[in-house]
Length: 614
Image (tube, rainbow, N blue to C red):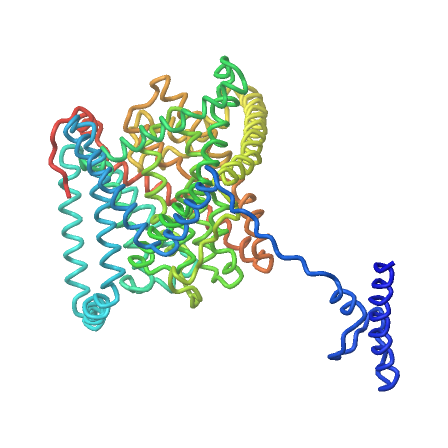
């Protein structure tokens, strides 16, 4: 009874409070709250009144968790907080520990087997030099540039009219002395030098704007040409005539060959142990996929961008070419003729015709790293392939600027103005997968082109043989015609006379079909012993480039979507760029003909000490 009374009393009290609230709204003519609208007021609402009458429950604290995983979480949080507060110090500690570990390993490797560790010593010295250079550049680079470099360049520019002739004479005398020293034991190497002069004169005589180069010593026109040839010659001198350079590239070639052989693991798993029975399809083409995947990973890590930027900076600083030209030429050493222009894609629409010509020439005169692996798997010497691809980059810029001189003002001044694009992959695994997937279309393109070109060549040879048989000429083929037409070209590059027809045949196959078929035929000559080692080396350098008639369509198809408004410009310069790219590869072969000596190679490989020419 009491409970009931008390309950009624409490409910009555609540109702009275609610009634007073409602009365308040009525008396003061305040808008009643609706479902979606509650007026701003200090008076309590019905819900608030009811909640206020409910008994309050004391908040119960939960007991803290304890145990092994709780301790692990706390330790992780403590370590994370320490790392965030001392990030720089942590990086320094890790770097010092890794450096000390490498020094210990390096010292033990030198003590254990110095001969095997000699290459490691060379690369370590290069890395130390780069590190010291980076430290000086970052801490005192601007001061050195302002106080030393710029004043020196200013004095040279002001005095150029007085010092250029003595400098030219000194350079000519020095070059003649070096050339005499190089060919004193093999005078036939002068033929390659004559071929180099002939190719330069050809591009000079048939230049697009001959009036722009009437002044033979114009710094604007001849600087990229002279510096391009100089860089090409110095690199060839380092690779072919110095003990250290030859060993570095020979070691690099062996390592690359070993590295590419790991593609056999995937081929054997997919095609079985007898995969080598179909050598090209199951041995060579998988190398393209494997190498493309590795290149994609290097791009993800930023290593490729770093190397390309430094090479581009060197070429731009010495040759005074524009940033876009230099970056594209450097990129062509590692990637293909349609991939390299992607680095300068935003600038294609504003490029001058001379710059577009240089872009296309660079694509024609070099090969991509992915197919380079395929040529190595053929049995072509890896060290010469690598050096040929690098040497052709400055040669391409040199010939491009001579064959189509700059008559306009470039809008790209420095390499820093061009940002090399990075991949959008989120991790290394995705980068490797994207690289492999991208190579599928490349492999399909290579296979399809080889099927088509070899079939067309066989059909064309059958027609030629039939026509030749009607007039008593037996065995008339496309290769036979090329072996006679291109004999003079092979000879002036320095090929031995008895091998000129074979190398001329390779040149014709490369020009009218592609370099892939050319290297396949070169492999046949090497295995059969049909040509000498010297002729093999010169042919390796001469074939190292995408310059073929079919590549015109590939470049136009790749460049036009990047800059549709410049379609006419691409078509205008395409044929000249093809000729310039071909000449650049031939000039690289001439440099190899001047510098290569088979006896000297044997001496270096046998470990006998020689006196470098540098």
